[in-house]
Length: 356
Image (tube, rainbow, N blue to C red; front, top):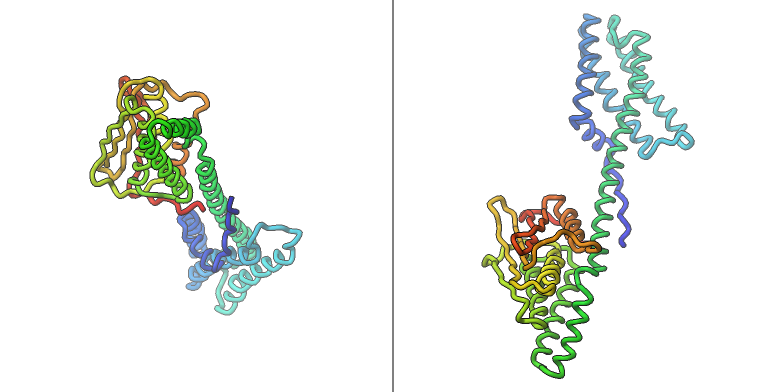
């Protein structure tokens, strides 16, 4: 299994911090709090520079505080190794508050204002330090969550790839062994049939191996694989295994995960004609007005629910969820005395890249 790649460092902490500050869930509270402070500043003092100074202090605090924290503490804060950085962070906050809350008012010869009163300067410093820590930590946690979700998604894709490589339920070993035994008998009795069976089995295995290495392939390739499977069963029991195809021409140009439908086709034979039920297997496909593809496989014998120990249906459901983010649906139900398995998936879905 491929090791999940580590996330690359952010190209610019300043740019990424500014983008994060503009997110509505941060921007709205910041604007509300800053507006309240600026209005209070204007009401407390009639000095013409009171409101501009209040705006400058809010803007400086909102930008400088989280940027300083993220530059000094790009990873999780650890007091044992970050004591010096914490002192530096406090010095930056003190410098900003001292410059805007004490130096600028004296240079402009301003009178008393709400934000420049001695006690207010201490409160402003506390707001700078706590606000920068809170915003910086929130952005770090958000990034860590995004990285964790990306790793979880990659591991889920890798797990799907492992299931493909295992492929136990997608190629029933009893079916393969029985086919090989039948070929051995045909070699003695019917060389032409044996040759056709070998060629079809070889083509099927070659296609399966190609599908294991691919992340997607055309719908036509998937349906051709099902046809090969049905033909192999027909060679062994031509009177019982009968297949009707109701497919549009030309087939929709749609890419799907390889061997997605193969377990459903195997189940159709196994629980239909091979179980003694007389009737046809019907393979059908069509597109809908809302750009969805519907592929169905119907076999004789009414559906009785999921059988203990079976894993084919669960694997198909999981692959659909991973490939289409829960936009695809598998339904299996009894339709009179038949069983219909139907897969509905979005045509325009962007499937994940190669797993290998």
